Image 1 (cartoon, helix red, strand yellow):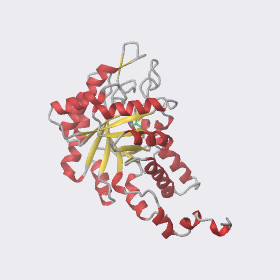
Image 2 (cartoon, helix red, strand yellow):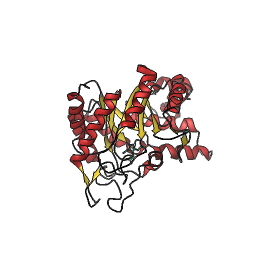
Image 3 (cartoon, helix red, strand yellow):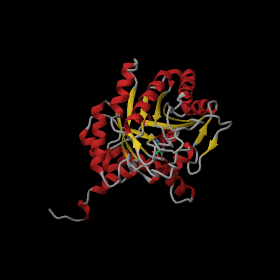
Image 4 (cartoon, helix red, strand yellow):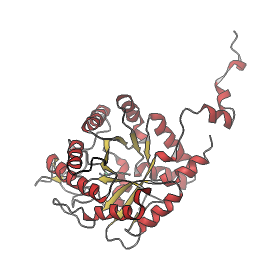
Length: 331
Ligand code: PBG
């Protein structure tokens, strides 16, 4: 058979919107989305965050309005970041975080699903995700895990559906699972930040949570977050968390690490969450602001890539737009 231009067949699949809709290999669904929410103690009015347009840090009152509005747009699942007013180095007070969860739970009952981020970086004076030794050069694993397990129990007692540890200590999933079960919270799930890389792309978030490392000792998170150069560490850490009882495994950042999502997909049957982090979101927002891409289409393209890689759950600062954008998506 002669190969001439009439035999070229791939373009037939691209020829019309109908053909592109029929031949799509992945589809997006707003039900897979989780919206992050920041709630700060002692804040008198909501504040904006540099680098995160359309995202605000809420007060205990304004967060109710935010969720009320979101529910109308098909958002019901949240990742909560409580930002306490008081910072210290140990003996943390988790009262405010509990109050945030309770306040939302009392108002919305089971109309919302609440995961709470579990980390100490917005609690510590030095901004690290755990307890440092006297020299401030080393982050101590075991005392940190102990504090996290207590924190997880307090959040569960306040009505959290899911605990999302983002600290990257060794053994925290097993410790948290044990603490939850011992205290009667067997039904509370764990979404582990399983493959969390030491990334440049958390900048806007650290402004939102006042959580940038700021000590003369340990000055970055490289001794606990995963090196971008080491994909095997990410896989081992994530599968370890899987064995320790995590219900969801998260990869973070997301768009730069689709190779990790795809590899992990081959090795686990747990649902995978992809966290498109603050710096990744900000990059798209800046391009959109400069007129260099279409905002909705830009986010949709990233979400498509994450889904193609194998993510079941997408955490995005633009989750509250997912339903509308997906409905109107141009194939
Ligand atoms: C807390 C935490 C961070 C993020 C989520 N949980 C920041 C960090 O590790 O410094 C980042 C989220 C984002 O950038 O959107 N440890």
